[in-house]
Image (tube, rainbow, N blue to C red):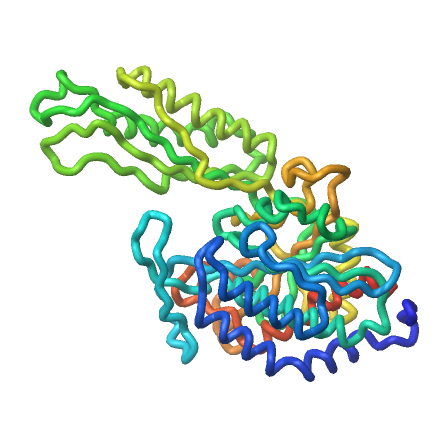
Length: 434
């Protein structure tokens, strides 16, 4: 075995392996796309991925953190590199018109039947993990160390990463020296975007119940109207960003749900809100959530609410911080593989991920120091569509295109699938083949 890359054509070797396995990976992708599953219900998906990884000779463990899959390829002395992909889908009816579009439905937690779609490309991500596994197995004579592959459940509800960590991910399996991941975006297919430092926002989804005292709509003085209290809450929450957050910081506070009552002449007993909070600083994020609770409590007291408000965190995640040194190392490998012209500077996203839990020792609940993370972005828009889209910059064009979570969003074209496989393999070899 050699660990020297002086005479090893990394780009050529990756390309040859991708060419040899691409038809199988594309078939796998289409199977996964047709059969999406909700968070923590990815039983068929995880079984199919585990089988594919076992066929490649990996040491596979199923059921980690519920439906998660861990696959190891131990190849002598060297670092441990973790590649992560996610598996879960969304309750959206697919409108792409694809021959292999999803027609699946499932029963959600509330008992309602919902349509299912891979509208965020998690089927693409997990297929790229399997593709990268095939590449790395095929070139194992040219690298040394341990490759650790993760197929993670429940990213959409920010639950899967912590579930896998809580199930002993870094005690039952090797603790990685670096964690690598990627996500598709409506940039030009075949391109790869990088960003160091703060890359994606922390997010908290908070459910609130405001209590009133219901009564007849004609006699409001004999009731406590939770609708009026809720209206004051929605208005007052807007002052957090404008009056409590420094202007150089980015914070979003959105009331996405407000429900109360059944008809016009009835004052209801309660009002329910769901609030979405996003920011790029975890400490500031905590202060904003505290401010929301402070304001709601005060408005309830001012409105004579007979019972204190109830708060429930639906789900939450921390901000994603890409390690600058690790980003530069991976970016250099991608530049050598794809060419500098195929790379772009990824703008910071208000979107959120639970990927950062894998690197943050405190938030992830594992001991020791933080683990460097690199999370990059692969373009998903075919060239013909990209050229005709208005805008001069990547950010301007992306604003004109369907985004993840749209029923029309389809990132799984062959160019993007190839790019995702090659980007993962090149990123891993940046650590294992030197």
